[in-house]
Image (cartoon, rainbow, N blue to C red; front, side):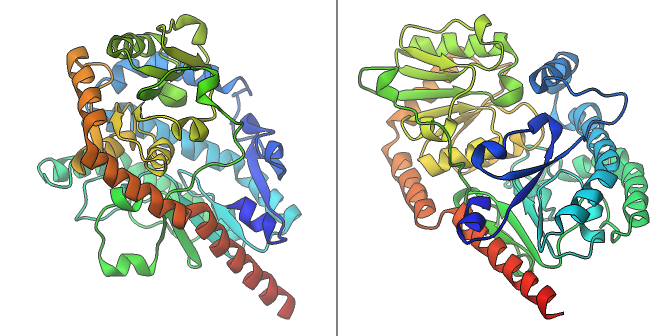
Length: 411
């Protein structure tokens, strides 16, 4: 979206956590760096922080989504709130220095400095849209099906039990900084100007008409500017290609990655593997290519099937590439994505730690042989190409920024 803004002659500045310093600069944008790690935290390699978290919580992420409300979701939300509170004065200072005409926010919890600034702002949501809660849809983070309401009320009650007091405390913090009150049990504000969410239309949930008065959907935003990738340079030959990626968190579990690599190798298909920071611990099969990190959007365009953890970004990129999926969720909204993919027949949901090797191979074979599914995915891919979400969202943001700047000049 920022690329669209820049192409239209407007200035885009990213307020970046220090752990991501240089990411926006690499794409030619300005950065205002924030330190979101509260004392006594120290800025360390992000993969090491994730690895420590995974090591301490691997037993929990093997549990049910109901149990994860207590062991994973609540502690992570506490940490997000802690970092938001710590970063608040820094973000307020950045807003004062940059003096933007428009602010775009995509964070897990509210940054009260944004609505308190009085500057028009946009809320962007890049996670599973179940987080835009609706009583007629499954509760977020549950991984429950839209077609089976059993367990919905119990899950919501457990979420309330663990988060009611936390919400009250964070709501007090937000209002003390001059931000509006938060809606019940919601940890982010909606914008009175523009609210965007990114999710493939073919996977999205049914909504009441009034929902669309507040929200606009971007039908998948795919990263650009990634380095080129040419499959034939690494895997000569013909036939289907499988892409295996478990994301930033899952790739740290080299034993899990290795087990999946070994099963995929048994199929005889070519495969590209995102091996993660512990790549030296993963041993690939003869028809495989891997690297610690890969330009995923460019890789996906040259593959035929994806095995993934189910992060919202990866799910969207897979639909944009027209790929069927085997989704192995680990945490948070990944369960919701996995269930939605399975419910709509775009792939299969499996447990990353309890999957059966024979069942996985059978799922690979069936998905690759499903011509009807290939056609459905090709139609979804072509629809995204006709109206790319980044272009649509960037135009909406750019127009709103221009309108805001004009109003400021007029006043």
